[in-house]
Amino acid sequence: RNGSRALSWNGFRALNRNGSPVQGWNGSRALAHNGSHAVGWNGSCPLGRNGSRALGRNGSRALGRNDSRALGQNGSCALGRNSSRALSQNGFRALDRNGSHALGWKDSRALGQNGNLVLGRNGSRALGRNGSRALGWNGLVVRVGMALWFWVGMALVCLVRMVLMLWVRIALVHWVRMVLVHRVRMVLMVWVPEWLSCSGSE
Image (cartoon, rainbow, N blue to C red; front, side, top):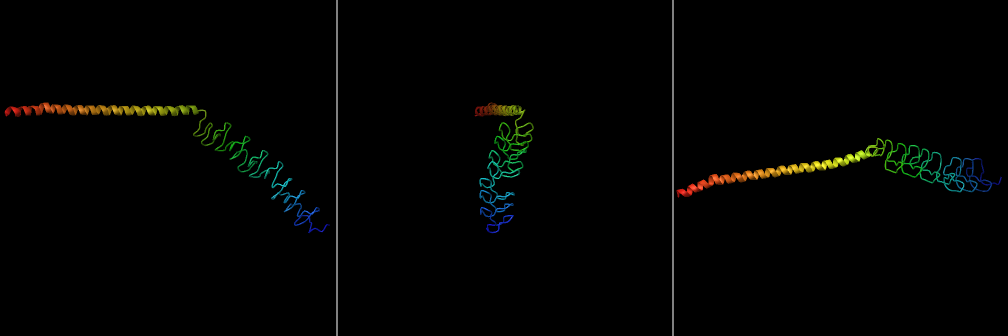
């Protein structure tokens, strides 16, 4: 009616009543009531009410039901039902309600209620009931056992060292004594008589 370059039902390269270009039902490169660019039902590069790119109800960027790398109500990064690096039931590399990193039911390298590293039911290098390399109900026993093994090992090493030194000392003393006694006997019983006999004959 106003003759503005092809106003049609789907709004391809069209003008509406207020003269804003390209607004239609499917929203392909369209404008909303406030003149923001690219608003439509399918949300391809969409704009919200305040003209920001890809906004939800609370104004967070890229918020949807299954949107990855999205923002939730508290503005935390990557929160959604099935989002990768998101807050979900299995909690793989996710954020919990308290903002702890990687907390979930079966997530390895997770954080538990006390904030310890790698706490879960089956987490490797974890703190839990059956965690390997962990401190759980028997953690005190493990620590005491390690301490006992250390001190018992040190005592055994010292004992073996003392015994070896004693044996070496006894062996040396015996060898020196035997050598000296043998030499003295040889001098007194062989060399002295020979010397006396030689001197008497002369």
